[in-house]
Image (cartoon, rainbow, N blue to C red; front, side):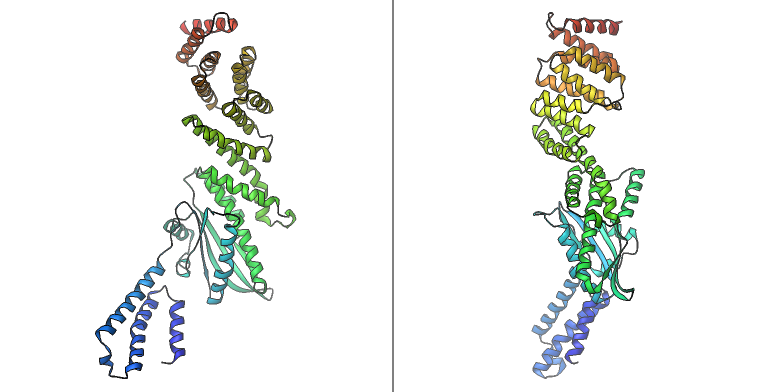
Length: 455
């Protein structure tokens, strides 16, 4: 066989490398090629070519071929602590395959990792063999699980004529992994996902580098946004807020007149999504502080609340959280009062509880009583009285000299929670700690509450 014949065989093996037929041909080649070389060197009878050394060499070549075949067929795995973005796009011919790998996949990787010294992403390219096995969303989901990835972009790239010009047409779909969530939330997420992810992209072959760059840029942007929502649904508020903040800043620098539909939709929804993530992250830091009393969690609240102030300066919940931060983190009662006053509204009266506490902390029980009365008559979540009780108890543990807060605890337990046993203990604690010449009006009121409780 001449050189061109061997070259054709090698090219065929390369094109069909992942198939069992290619392995068989490669094994035959690993046996025959050395024999041809030995024969051309020795020019002796074929039987005499099989020396022990040569048989060993051929065995090593065959084993190496089999090992390489199995190794290359092995699915890659996502790296620990990385967000795995799996790209599994098949191509209809070798030319398209090369363009897809060199231009689109490479550009997508660069864009996703852009401006990140230590990227949290890991872009995993799946071979043509495994990409061609994806026939449905179920196949893509199974692949995602095997690779231990978080997001998979799958589909096909074909070469087609559009208006007389050659184009690469990307027919794509994607699946994102997230924690189990209610069906209604999942359906809403799926609907939004479907509206955003482009099902088809056409790239003019004459401008393929620019076309793939634009397509990759769009897909990378949408991918990050979708992953940020999945992260939020999976309770990873740090990741969701960091991704959304990066996208928010990126959108500010883009010309809105040139936005395609997916970017318009993201641009409309991103601010509210980002605020939602930042609020959740801030609440998480506060929750962790309330459980551990580790002030590092309070310190982590501050930059998150600063971001909220820049994006949504009038946000009601951010004002409440900022008031908590100023009090717990800095004991800055004046700053806390400013935030609570900014949160005033007639729809939700949680702010009244905060206002009442701050008045009581400063020993202004008349003002505190007015705020509590407004709170008790208003609308608030079921969790608010319990959280108020815990908050006051935590402050009393650190500052036991603020005994007037025991009256506040008794008030919440008696008038809101209806826990007469706790209310009795709280009022008695207040009376035992409060000097007789102080807060006489509220000492008398506590006594009246105790008479009612005792019957």
